Image 1 (cartoon, rainbow, N blue to C red):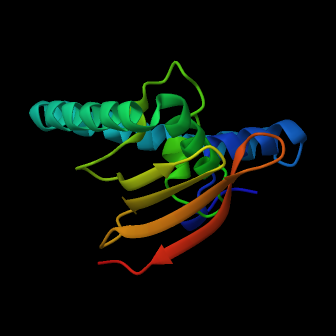
Image 2: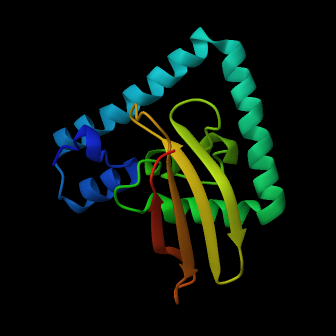
Image 3: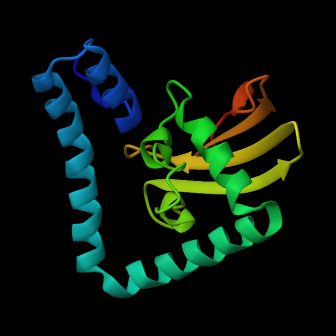
Length: 169
């Protein structure tokens, strides 16, 4: 079960598949090597353009801080974690470890460079939440936009109740 380019599984799904025995060690390593290459390419790009990377980092940090101040870091992480479990959602590759508090919140945002991941708007209430996202992955010609409605289940965790996909700009 090797992930194809158009259906790349995020690391959290790969770990579950491997630990459950549904994926061989070789397939797991092959699938995870894609994620490693993606990270290395991003680091190389940042090294080639340090000023642009610095500006992008500041922009992402400021936006993450404003999201956390407005909605609470815990709520933002909880929403990102729920989105990471959505099948066929390309940003899940960024969000797969959003629940890990030692990873700074700004690491999940990409406001100006590809892979693009922007939060257009977010509304958080006690039992429901909604988030309007814009993202661009895998060399897509234009950004995609989606609106997610999340609901708190009986177990206390948020889950995606509704997903609305808008055509690109």
